[in-house]
Length: 319
Image (cartoon, rainbow, N blue to C red; front, side, top):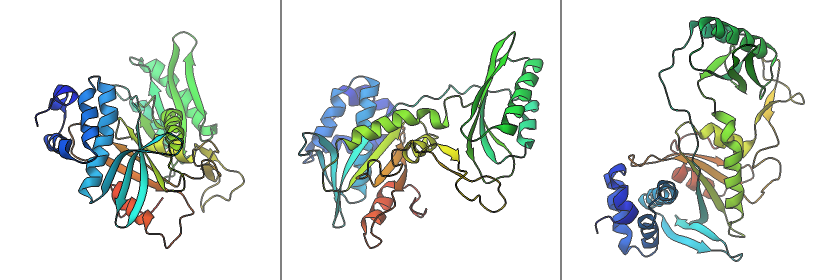
């Protein structure tokens, strides 16, 4: 069948192999409704929200899974998919959030910024400065940033101001890292933790749709390939300094996670598997990562099944 509706409107932006597979679902016992939903959406956001479900359905079909679409729960909600594979069964909830990233301009990176990477503190530091700063203004920005980084803790943020020109830029100590000196993430004013609250909101929405007494998996799709850090922060909590822990050998400070994560403590205890993925309509495969909550039975085969289905790097250790 030829594409129509939303599939026709957006066909030039969709990988041809993906489009062909979706068109073949018109005769599929359960996925014909998903194909119909794609045709019904003419607005880009609504189309991409459903397209994320379609991309994950395609991935699961290619891995030998049997799928049921929009399975009702006893509470009157719906799971996006019931998945059966290799004698295992789980229920899948796919949510998509449009994440904002600044338009990538060609940045003129001042050599003065190299000074910040000489600071002997093991942190990832996100910096963003106003376009068109003069050399004098950049020097003011770097001096203020250096003083802040020397005394800041993980999670601290500073807007650097000039008495005359107003805000020059922003600095945030994002996370610890394995190096001995500062490493800079340049030009990411909305990166890292900023998207976490929106992602957590979607996680809570998915949790309300869980099938009782069953394994449920939450998958969050975002707009950019570098959103995995935001997802991990939403799931596990913000990076913080932990004075109640012993630091690793060679470090003066221990780091951990704040209690603001979706999985913090015993919060949302029925959620034991969650993943992030990124799609681009012109790509044939999504990029995926999976997190598993501690507590699975070591003899339970399901965690390994989930890792094979949802982790782009299947040889990576379980998280």
